[in-house]
Image 1 (cartoon, rainbow, N blue to C red):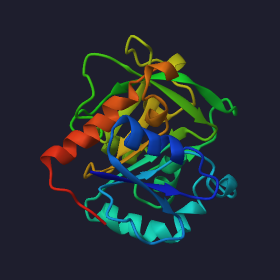
Image 2 (image 1 turned 60 degrees about the vertical axis):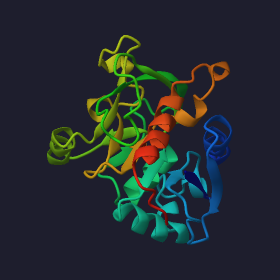
Image 3 (image 1 turned 30 degrees about the horizontal axis):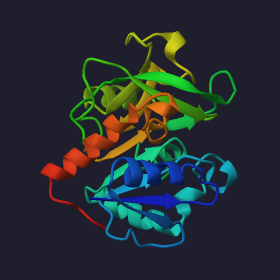
Length: 236
């Protein structure tokens, strides 16, 4: 399978995502420049973390209009697999591919540390290979990760199983203290209704080897690889 990693001006986790896919997972990977409209036959599109266009106006608000996003939106709407990590999550929300908004962290401070995640829906292309009996230790690095959605939309997210990850304690307890940014219901990641688009604030690509403090991010990449071992590839 092939990962296509989009690079916007200001992206800084594109190389981490490339290394996760190419070096750790031994899969084909290619950088996709934001001014191109070609997805180069990619099976999975990664919108990486960073500060696209300096996060001017609003995080992800300008990147949403990059030429490549026309192709990403078409790809996603036709069922293609797309994952947006941190700034990439913000871009997906700005592009209307995921509901809600990402606001300033509750304490108005940039948060950079390891946190723990609970897999709330293990039946997605991004989570099917995640262990059900343990939390995932994954780093965060964001200042605008406070997920907000209107009450009716939040009810739909829960009802439709669109909440993929929540912030929890190491023991898996959902508490206010485990929430690093004030996100509603401790939400750390969501999918669209169809389940082919994931946005998450934590960085699985930075948790691919134990020397980095955790290799729990491998479970998410394993899920994607396993999905394409059982599904025909959908390329753009």
